[in-house]
Length: 290
Ligand code: NAP
Image (cartoon, rainbow, N blue to C red; front, side):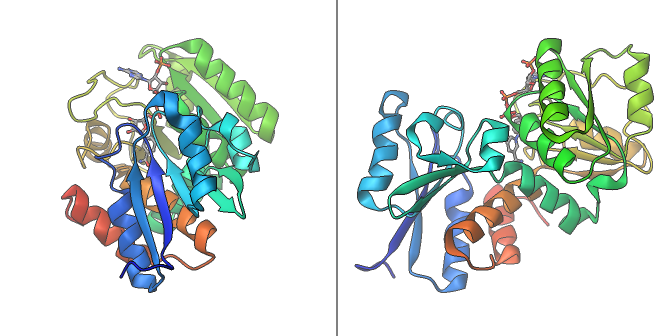
């Protein structure tokens, strides 16, 4: 029950009405029996600074940050964690006595999803990342820092792939190569065949979105590989369908969404998050059967 002592958390985005985070976090807070509430905030871009100042002024204990503010929010914060600095993006703000720290749980969320839900160790072998935007950046750094021995970044705009590969190599020492989104590239095919993990970090295959073909021969992703799609709507994406047809283990991005929330909640409260309660709520919200 909300009363005079209720602690407020939330999410900032625009739009934000579609977000599953309020339902997921409120279910977790109820389960933990803590006097907290998690609400959506949708400031217009020109009021983002005021919105962040409001977190301080009102003593809001923590917020998640989603599209399109993950980078724009940075100048308004007091400090960044190592993760947020490396990713150049913030998905979680922690308010400790008025000091706002920008953190990022997207990359670590994916790693936790791979380990917990798919028993996949990032050190198992090379990984191929499709896309070079915000999600790709977080995932590339997180994989490299979790023992992935070699990475390939594949993008339509080659310069962005190159920039990301160079950043990952410089920041982590992991070998990283850039490839153009080109189905005829033999070196990309060779790299992909010896990879353990393929991750789609583009909106390709998203409901109502782009339908481009992946720059891969028809038998990839294949047997012995994990094909992880950060997209989760539809729950069985075209990337997953082609992987499953070839005998790959396939996954959609709901587990990444779940674990980024788990890590944010644990960071805010210092309590172990009720993962299965959060997962159940997420599935309920998305209408996906487990
Ligand atoms: P972003 O920063 O806008 O980057 C989009 C990336 O996709 C860019 O590399 C872009 O290539 C590429 N791309 C876009 N349309 C394409 C097309 N038709 N063909 C090939 N490449 C295309 O976006 P983001 O924040 O990284 O998000 C990317 C995806 O990750 C989203 O679809 C979202 O669903 C997913 N995501 C999931 C989670 C989760 O928790 N599961 C979290 C974050 C994001 P160019 O550079 O060439 O334009």
